[in-house]
Image (cartoon, rainbow, N blue to C red; front, side, top):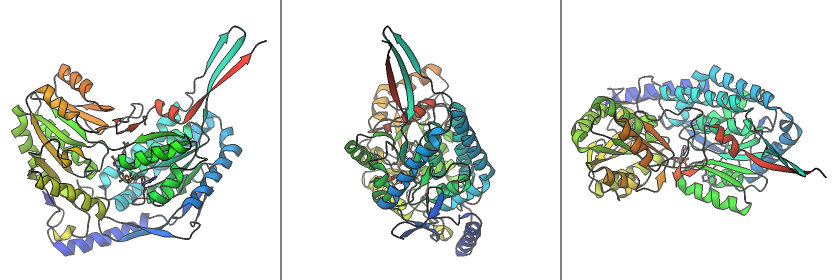
Amino acid sequence: MSTDSDSGSDEASAVRQRHRDAADEVVPEQTGLFIDGEFGAAAGGETFDTVDPTTGEVLASVARGREADVDRAVEAAWTAFEETWSDYSAGRRQRVLTAIADTIEEHTDELARLESLDNGKPVSEAKIDVRGAAEQFRYFAGVVRENPGETMNAGSRYGQVITEPYGVVGQVIPWNFPLLMASWKLAPALAAGNCTVLKPAEQTPLSALRLAELVGDTVPDGVVNVVPGYGEEAGAAVTGHPDVRKVAFTGSTAVGKQVMKSAADTVTDVTLELGGKSPVVVFPDVDVSTAVRLVSSAIFYNTGECCEAGSRLFVHDDVADDLLEGLVAAVDDMTIGDPLDEDTDLGPKVSREQVDRTMEYLDAAREEGGEFLAGGGQPDDEALAEGCYVEPTLVEGLDHDSTPAQEEIFGPVLTVFRWDDYDEMMELANDVDYGLAGGVITDDITKANRAARDIEAGYIWVNSYHDLVPGLPFGGYKQSGIGRELSAETLDHYRQTKTINLSLR
Ligand code: NAD
């Protein structure tokens, strides 16, 4: 593994300066609550800091929303729904969504650098996020007119089945793909005709706020409201609000369960996109260099902070030694360093707290008999000392029941298992609480189809990983969630069915 510096603290101060300069250029001035088309302070006047995980320096102070602020946002959203947005035809909403997509694309470099500063992700990957965010709006602009109804002639009655938006929806998102997750939430909600109150993660609120600023003139006031703040404060106020008619949550399974419980009080519809511990199955026929590239990307993309990360490798005995040798070499070749550098492969994790969490799992792996083939700690490099870095890590020899093999680490840590019996392997591959995704690597189409059928998960990649295509539904089995995003099916999560039974007598 190389780093982008050889000269320790000199390099660290150069990175710090580069980040300060970039922050001057791209950190938005507007960091208040965005309610009813305007930025403003929280009712209590409180703020919280969002920190650059590369340097540890504060990027901005952001308004800290709480219940009273969420109340105001929900009220503004209902007013906008009743007075404006519900009158917008599908075609007019389509134009709004397209305009948002255009605006995001026009600001690709700015938004990518902002995301990289706030989250720590390599800027090359942040650009992929920004393009993906624009694509979301384009996709839902494309399907916005798909609102089929039914009519039924039943003798003395005439029936119509139509769909209607919920009105006001509440949306809570995590920090790993801040802008992308905001777009996954906003685009279908708006396409279906709803107004929304969105709460970004407290670690990464800036890109959602900048998006609100950028589209403030495109979307009528009150249609999109953004209330940053902490989960137990602003988040819980959104997901438990009695006037929010639908809750869409992306985050950890533990919080997802709480959200579902609180929605029960008001019998509110909930969709949940939660955690994962996805298996990647490698068959013996593979081209090893292709498999190395896919397995490495499955776990290390976005510093392993992906819900769908392929974090458990099941590699056939016949190719295991070669594949692992190739993976160790791939880790060695990775550039770990400043995420603003286009050549960086692995940036810092989002926060110290997340580093500590990952390190606890690495300690557990050590205690539970894991053998580290690569990584296993934080990089020993003065130039990276101020950043939230964790080494890309390969660990073998763990029991599949062990904590690091069962729980979502959400970092660059791959647990490795070898197999020679397909059924035993598949039993282990499915022996986790999660079922978000899976990967299959083989050139044998029958084996590929069989494994894709057998993995209990909502999304299976065969000979690729991570690429998500609008139109192909994404979501989890088991404790990975309820509902699907990225597809026309998503629209149905944002509208309700009404039957009109008309007597002809
Ligand atoms: P998290 O659950 O801690 O937080 C997610 C969001 O929920 C944040 O905005 C947070 O402020 C808010 N929140 C926290 N407590 C809350 C509460 N009591 N009520 C309402 N909101 C609350 O998760 P995280 O650490 O930010 O994100 C990582 C998790 O997200 C991982 O488990 C990852 O797998 C998951 N994730 C899933 C998907 C998916 O599509 N399935 C996508 C991205 C991330």
